[in-house]
Image 1 (cartoon, rainbow, N blue to C red):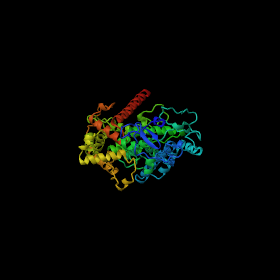
Image 2: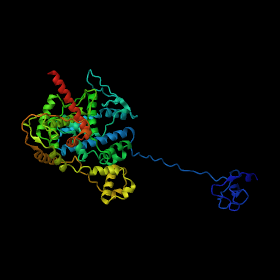
Image 3: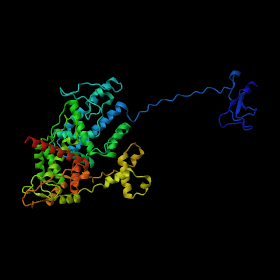
Length: 518
């Protein structure tokens, strides 16, 4: 009876088939329910001594071997180093493009490599010490940061210049993707190669120069092992593209950073060939270039980067200053209002007449078939699943290509290698993809139509100069001119308008000062 009182509960789902009881007890190696019914199917064990009765034996489990699973994605210091290697690989491809496709001098590779070495010197020295100590990332200064004597260029968190000193520790700034383009630009500047930032922006925009597919063109091993945060940074190049105004800001920030960390000063722009390139792109007469040079001399404009100014404006970028100067010089020579005489030749004896209506017609007829691909990409960003099912075959293929460009290849499947995806053709219909030969031909044709002999009677007339503060104030012809100037420089029309207006106000201040001195 004592054994009957040691009732145990059956496992869930089991019960006595006779009475439905869920409690049982063990007696003589047999199992009975609480009401005495024997439960069949119970395995009886050999029972030795009475004290061992009811024991079912010990269970021996073999301990499984622990497998060391290698992490695919790197983290910490290794992940940061892999990202730097990927950025360096992109930079090498860009330099190779400039040398092999655009005919730049081979010395450009050496100059850009030295600039890159200075950029990551704080990181590499720290990385070496970390590997030797086999500890967590600890950054320290292995050499003093060089700054100019007698100047206080201390780094502030809100300053545009970055401090690359290793002592910043984990706050050491990693290079941005746009810095690769800027280093190519600064390398050309040091070698006096007249390469405009607008040229680099155009080559990136039409996918000639490596940048937009930076992550997709990496080796698969690097793609799989790169940390997600850094992979998203590289994927953002293809998703959001390149913004021209951000590129100009990055140039100023990088130049200021080299000044802060190494006391380095970059030379003046080789602005005369660059002005000729801008004039050719905008189909402007040669008189505009001559007046721009005279105007720069009168205003004492030097096309250096403003490294010593406390407050830097957008116009202070030397290349933006150059295109703004060319626009102002053109307006002085050839007024945008056809009823107004030239500011420099009121009598109409020296300068020819420029027909802006013919210029606009020539640009609009020969201009890029702009906007179709860009508009489709904007639509695809906000498309709904219901709209996808209603797309035509052509638009659906474009949508799939857009997804392929945006998402890329995030994982690798061995079976998928037998079904390779079709290579997406890179669209070359960008507004910046006009070849050099086509630009020259367009300039000859438009100038032949727009430049005419001046038919004025030689009498001096009152002249006025129109300055536009905002885009809303611009006339039809002026808007077309400002827009094309912005496109040539990689800037928006509103930014181009503000830069031109700032230069015009600087000229007004110079005139007032000159009159007071007289």
